[in-house]
Length: 363
Image 1 (cartoon, rainbow, N blue to C red):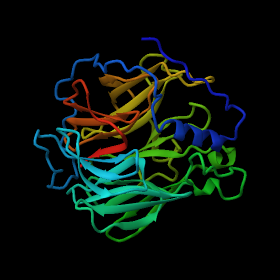
Image 2: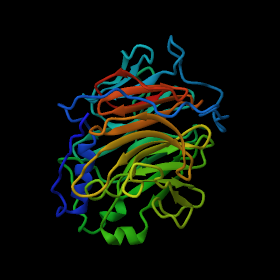
Image 3: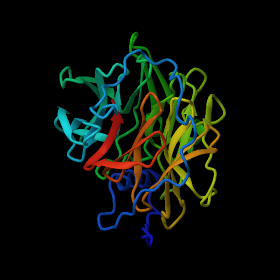
Image 4: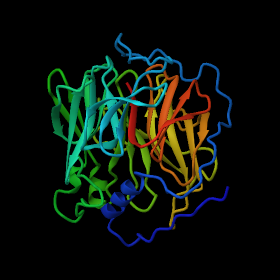
């Protein structure tokens, strides 16, 4: 099918305005575009996605009638819901409104769901029990991700950026607000990692767009958003034990390089999450530049060095592919293409489960 080209004229806008525009644009699909069949072009690798899931508790997420783990999701109306992963139907509403995406996270025993609630230009990381009770405000922040061992919660404290909230990067103190926060739940101690000084002084401030813990709870995959048009996307692997900043490759942080085709030099990783075996599930897009022309969206399993291990699916060029998630076994993957939820088992061809979502996770 022909690819629609989306043009932008934002090259002269301030960097943070562009970042906000990128986030808003990524929230939904182009409504009129026909959608091709999602296909898998690389056979499932033997043993792919398997692993011990080191550091995980003995409890496992609830299973649906078809054997799949349960799913929690955020609807386009802002409700946090539980979804039957065999039918795609919503089975329970945990929070009726005010929830935003694309990050939602479930404790390893399945008892608690972490999410972001937004009101105006304020965002709060919150939690709720899987029964819908015990709604708790944790801290001002976004994108909460609970570690697989259940001991640490990571989230961001960056400014809210949407069509109504665009902080002025020229104002004193704005750059210092961009932080990755890691809270130890037992003690309440907090570790904060800021942007490197050279990035803060440069004025191009890449906001965090997604967080994912490694299976042993020792590292975070930190996805950052573009700061100009569709350039600047990145995934950093952060070791909190040694890192001083969250986007500095000189101290406890490495970036995941883009490899393969098409056009590896101008392609970018839109989002990445850890798998149980230490590899990453990524959304790979082409191409960066001005004007914006997305001609390729690929869902890949890659090594931490960016090498292709397995191609899960060919996505839709004109839809954003976000809210990636893997279950603790690494056998079940999910992602959103626009507002549609796709699920893959064992590296096989994904199938569309349901629609009308802005975030989803196993749990």
